Amino acid sequence: MMISGRCAACKSQRRRCPSDCIFSPYFPANDPQKFACVHRIYGGSNVGKMLQQIPADLREQAANTLYFEAQCRIQDPVYGCAGIISKLYQQIHTTEIALAKIQTQIAYHKLQIPQPVVDSNFNVLSTIEAESNLDVLPAQSSSMGEFQWSSQAKLLGSIKFDFQ
Image (cartoon, rainbow, N blue to C red; front, top):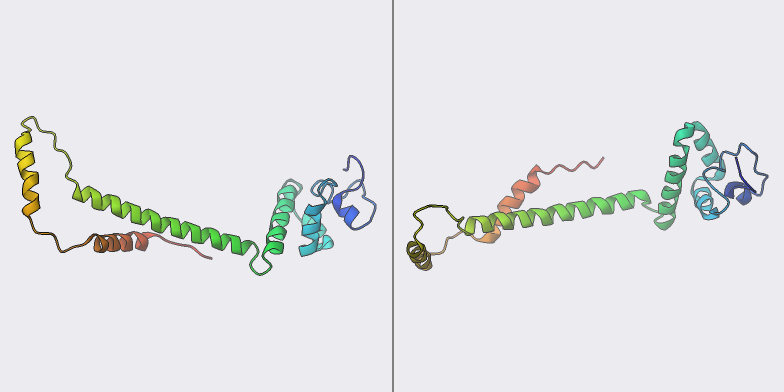
């Protein structure tokens, strides 16, 4: 039921707005652009039919969804909402790869830095001697790049993407 005047749909279609207008609760007169977008993509008659087929408690959400999808289709006529979803999946994928790299680096650094051992017979001099002897040891053949690659491959192998 309209409080005053016609709804945006009735104004757009230049008709009288009945008291039981299906559009009036979802396309108010103060937001004519909302109905204009939906009308441009779906057509006013089709939107009215869709709203009538949906239970009354879901109509507002449906009208807002139609508006969002229409805006997306106007901005990106080829992909519409699917383009946004694709971009979001790409961002998730990129972020997961970055996270895997960081987790690999953390694991690598944990292996490189000896963990402090709590011992009541802790001898500072023997620790310093042990650290100075590390300089004499030959370098290992495995590089950090190889370590990162194998850890990332294992992590990425366990991630499942569902693109339906």
